[in-house]
Amino acid sequence: MNKDNKGNKAYLKDADRTYQVEDYDREEQVSKGLSTSHEQVSDTYMEGFTDGKIDKVDEEGDLKTHNGEKISKTPYKS
Image (cartoon, rainbow, N blue to C red):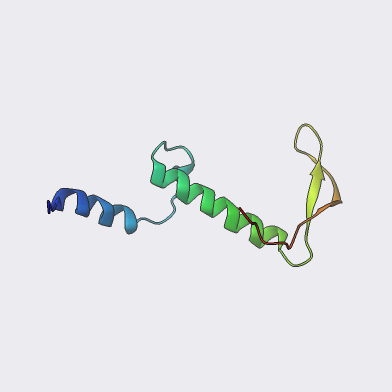
């Protein structure tokens, strides 16, 4: 069994990372994952998730109405 201590230390460095605003502009996989997770948490916090609806927006992304599509409570099945 080949133990690559240098590789293990790299994993530990990534495991200790927390979200930074700069992660949105970085191309690293860890940065992309952190920024995506941060976006999802922010959206859930702002929109809520109990009996929520997805807002309707126009082509420019401006809010049209809060009476959008109902958020499904059915768990995802693969």
